[in-house]
Each structure stands twice: as C-alpha cells, then as structure tokens.
Length: 141
Image (tube, rainbow, N blue to C red; front, top):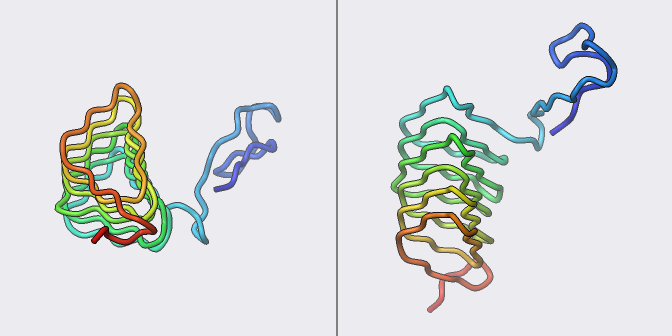
C-alpha cells in the first residue's frame, strides 16, 4: 500500500493544498486486492495476495499464505474460507480455516466453525460455532 498526498491528487492534477489529507491507494505487486462495498461476487475466489472484502461474496474464498480482511460493510456467505490470517469486521456465515490466527473484531458476526492456531474475539463481537485450535498450522491428532 502506498500513500499519495504530496500535493498531487491520486488521479493526477494537484490537490487543494500540500497539507490535504493523504489518500490511500493499493498497489498490485505484493499489495492488497480490494472488493469494494458496491461489489457482489458469487462463486470461487482464490488470491495469491492480501484480500480485503467490503462488499458481498457468496461462495468459497481461499487466500493462500496471506491475510483476508472482511471489512465492516462486508458480508460473506461461504462453505469454506481459508487464509493464513483472517480479520473479521463484518458478517461471515460459514466455516473458517486460518493457519495463524482469526480476529473477530468488535461489532463483527461469525456463524460457523473455526480451525486455527490462535484466535482473538473482541468484546462486542458475536460468534456462534465451534473452535478447533491447531498447533503450528497442523490439526491436532
């Protein structure tokens, strides 16, 4: 992710002043893919980079060795969600598998089972399901 705000607008031309609020933009190489709040996807999503979902997705989501963030406006209905790390700020209905950690933020909703090495559930979050804690990214046996 890179910031622009040095006097030029993200879209070319000049900003109102050099002290204008910096805008955030996402770069492609080793960056973050973003599905905005007006985007609706039905099907399978596979990503080789960090992914932010702030729209609606129905299907499966796999983010190999990267972070999946479900934004505050995000709604995800999935049979399976897999990633290295999963941050939930919106609403997720489905089973979750994270190699490292799952974060369920304040005001988030998760209905489904979790398989992960670590979990953080903030006060104010809603969770309904089972939790399977794994060691070193491997299932307990």
